Length: 120
Image (cartoon, rainbow, N blue to C red; front, top):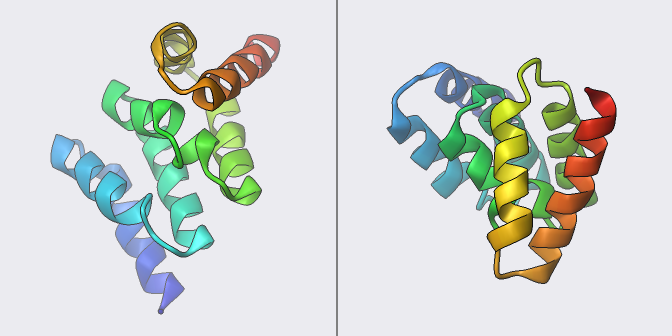
């Protein structure tokens, strides 16, 4: 796989403002068997900093902060911490802590929320 080409595609999708770009990143990138692709995709979704993209990496089992790969999870967390405007991310983290049915997802969201509160 040509990772440079994949990186360019993911970067291009991260710049698109249409909602379909989020669906493509979610359905293709976050489900990749390759950690590096999932990591690039999660970072791109965070950089979009809109509700739908942040929801994917915060409140979905096996994606973003809930990825089984610690590299992907930590990369996503670092990207969340580096957001200039953390308002939407914190809102989704709070909602996830209160309403998600998966205990592990709630615990991860609670931890990331605490980190984000310290970084403000």
